[in-house]
Image (tube, rainbow, N blue to C red):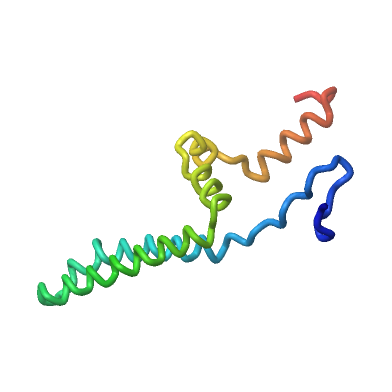
Length: 119
């Protein structure tokens, strides 16, 4: 016996689940990275005593780990998969390609639109 709340599509499979909003999870995840930067790149260079530097570094390190795991929990498997795909080096080529400006694109369109015109 099937539950009444299960919805089927015409093909018989279940419809895709609603997309999760990943923005809060990504924000918490990036906050953890910011805590790492503060803990290891800023606090050691402050004009404080060694005791206060050690306490500050430890506190920021603890917050970084807490935010990291909370962010991972909020993102879930789908969010982690998206982040891994975006930061994978094989996808970096598209970041560094020169993009055409608007002026270049209109010239290309005009010349292709009138192939019989003398150039």
